[in-house]
Length: 256
Image (tube, rainbow, N blue to C red):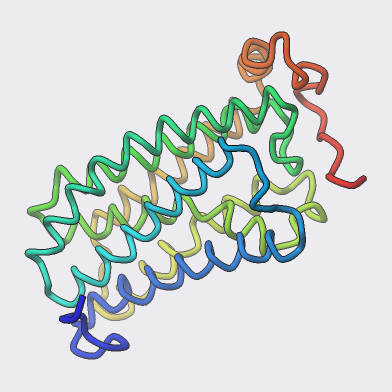
């Protein structure tokens, strides 16, 4: 890490968007969850599965930040070695993310700013899309122009929970899915705008990455309001406290 360029100096104009964008995304996530803790809506006394989720996803955040700093500063040898840790981390996120989401549904503790049916499909599809974009970035690692843009879009796909804890999301019900979609697309759209203004064109990798994120949200919106989501919610929560929550009604907010 000693070879990293301080404060972005010495980084190419193209890579500055990845350098500062990566730092900004990590700061949003850290700020969001720190505010949750400071407000007393989260605590270190949470169940073990919550800690497992936090460690897994925050671990990826640190891997992504490290890789961004290494890649943009030119330390490619170490970037490649750390990359294999990241590749092994992605399946862990899929497993932990899915299990924790469904455990929350069974306990009746899914995110109250979404209906249980919507959350049932949103949580896994978000992490599956992240895994797909990240895997594509790894497969295309020798094509660095595609590699860094797809990874950037994959990370942006995880921004919903961070912004969801910074913004007053309960005030936006029932439009919270649209607000979260906007937060997920924010960083890729900024990066695309900067690139277009700098070069007069937009790399195709951005179109694939952004298109994948948009497609994900369309599928989630359609499925989340469908009988399929209701049936899946019923199957997951059968015999648990979560079964008492109507799939298409917003759960009561904590403390309400």
